[in-house]
Length: 340
Image 1 (cartoon, one colour):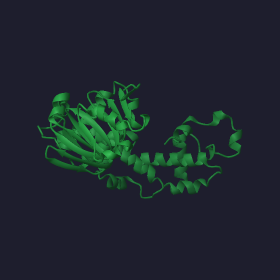
Image 2 (tube, one colour):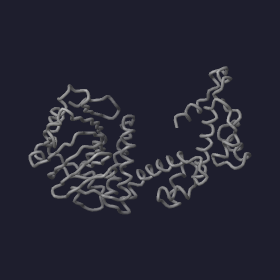
Image 3 (spheres, one colour):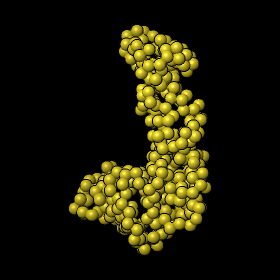
Image 4 (tube, helix red, strand yellow):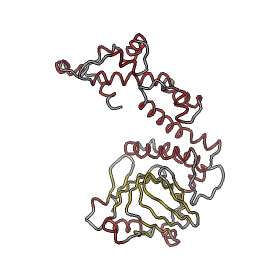
């Protein structure tokens, strides 16, 4: 059975590892019996069946993670459609494994990072053994976000917005356990708008999905910066090539952070600060600064003091002498920077 977790956002979870050996398949099958007819491709593998599913109920959406194996077959027949009366679209994004679907004649096979939409009011057959993210979207909610009526059963778009959707869902599912009820309508709308932009690229859709798209692009950019802080080539031009965006788009993304160059400089200074504070012996500051893109010692010293309020030589470091310092000398912002 599903277990209910206490959280600001309602959550349920099915984890077969907590069940007695050999009972997982029957328990999971009974949970699906109204909406799906489910079996294993090789019923002899039933003792090895595992399932780990977490679902959150947002403002009109159900979203979650699922991990299944070995290969299962699911059939959504007319009797299932009449039984549960679901008027939803299912959006399934595969992270790893295999997923093959026959959506009433539309054949779809997913690679990692790709997604498919199926209409819960129509028959469907699938075979899968995969880890995935899934969203159940009310029909009216998604239809209203599209610029025109569209048949969506078995649609699997392969465009830039579709690629961003996976990163958006990953971030959403990580953040939902701590989200507040007041945030849910905005998270829901951003998710639906991004799905709609993936399905029917139009100026209106892309404008509505822009906040979600920007968040994904900014996460990509910040990750790239963090991984290349010691590279001289790290610049706005390199980020534009990496993200495949225009310079004006990149500048708009980084405007709340003070601009691209400012953000790179601040992250380099933070990395130098981290290295200094964690070293057992005092590193050569000038060489450390140069390896992080500061060609002038005077420029580095001025920038470091402006950012932290003290010089690089005043950073407490992890030496035997540091143990003699009072605990109050450990700065709160030093502690926070260790979480980057």
